[in-house]
Image 1 (spheres, rainbow, N blue to C red):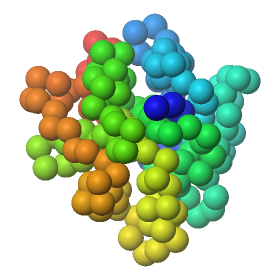
Image 2 (image 1 turned 90 degrees about the vertical axis):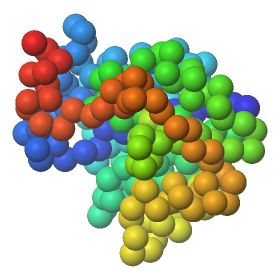
Image 3 (image 1 turned 90 degrees about the horizontal axis):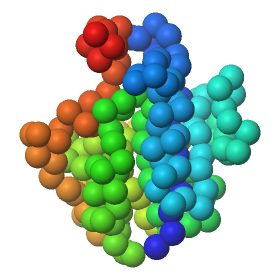
Length: 191
């Protein structure tokens, strides 16, 4: 298996009120932290998905811009699956500061040549810290062309078709998948 990765940084940050990628966590902006985390996984390609050119984009990372109208992470995942030249795509949202190397490697251990892996917390899939096989590209393209942009439903279809496996996440590990969406969330981890 070969791996590409995409850092999903195309959110509008309406609730946060500022660019989440530039929020400091453990002494570094989230974009830098997340790219470092992904880079350590032995990738062949590394992408950043965004609505517009981020001022912080490193020159060695390929930018994938959403085609308007943006459908959020669905657009980013579709673009990355279409652009990659590997068997699998690792996806990670920029606003998941608690994700760590150990958990990302655990996801990699559950991927197979035939399928990716999407974590499940309770009854909800976590499609923004997941691994997708190249074969999922057609499903994402179809979803982007249709009227239903729900990543939850795409994940369920991919699972039903054997393209991804669902991985139940324990309550103790669930906080690793937490996103920061509002200023109060940031205050919590910077306190």
